[in-house]
Length: 76
Image (cartoon, rainbow, N blue to C red; front, side, top):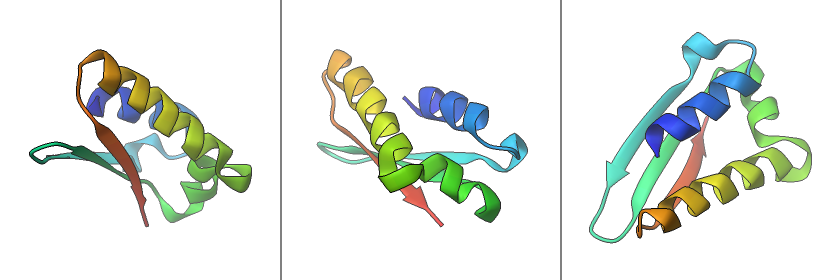
């Protein structure tokens, strides 16, 4: 799941070398933290959060396939 978010995020931003994805596994939920450059934050979030919502939808589809639960957090 981490690789999927990293791949999509690097395709969206202008500075792909500053994309950092961390995966924190809990008992029931896996939290994926996405960090990007400050200038690329708007591109990852999108207008009215549409891009972020789409990223979360893709992540949830992948997690469901693996019978897990995942949450995406975009960290400033």
